[in-house]
Image (tube, rainbow, N blue to C red; front, top):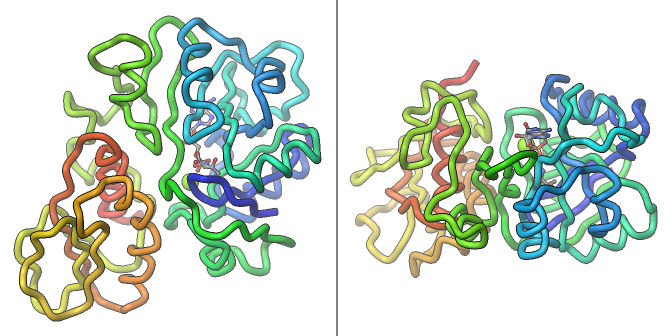
Length: 299
Ligand code: TXA
Ligand code: MG
């Protein structure tokens, strides 16, 4: 079943039922070695699954419910299927804040494994229609909770031991997390990352969030016939298909609009989408991460 969260729609199954979890991988066409996030209703349920370090406690207190996923040491006696954690000694846990997700989690009383509700490698869904476009025929139900408010996936933080590290930028900014932990900067753990926290080049990344059209990033002048993904008040004079992620230059608004905009420009059937520069701070880090992956060479 697909369910809305404040980040993106998830494709959910009972995390303790190996057969149900296997169906998620089938519907998405997702490689089995990629572990899933487990969603729970409250901190008591989270404690049953994961071992909370000091830093994990602080982050849970500040950001849950919300757009944060904590990777924690897995409790020895959980009923979570090994398929969910891909055999790792850790488990990724999130308490979503969306009222529909909360209601479902409370009603069923089970941890729900849920990756984003898209075919593996495609753009994540931020509306029920996006889910249907990608997975229709593969799933039996979509709970429609309207458009997702955050619009970009949760931030994944490894808080399983010692100092927490950033595994995936997302809906909670790395700056906000570092500040709660009393550190100037959050260490990024990603084999392709640089000092700035952004991957060095799209060529090094697995293609993901990929539209059919080619993406050109940090463009100042779009080429004739290109669609334009703009940001901010200063937009080049331009007549072809254009979407502005945020006319006021608000990164939150831009994150919320990003995936729907990529889908809409892709549907306009242009061979290429030119993307203006988007600043890298705050939610800009997650936006640039997704754009780099969308621009990466396809397998
Ligand atoms: O906002 C979100 O996070 C959405 C909503 C539905 O909650 N979910 C989502 O799930 O984006 P997914 O499966 O597309 O991404 C989960 C990420 C992957 O990058 C995966 O590798 C990582 O979390 N992950 C899951 N379990 C992990 C673990 N034990 N250790 C390290 N990374 C893990
Ligand atoms: Mg995903």
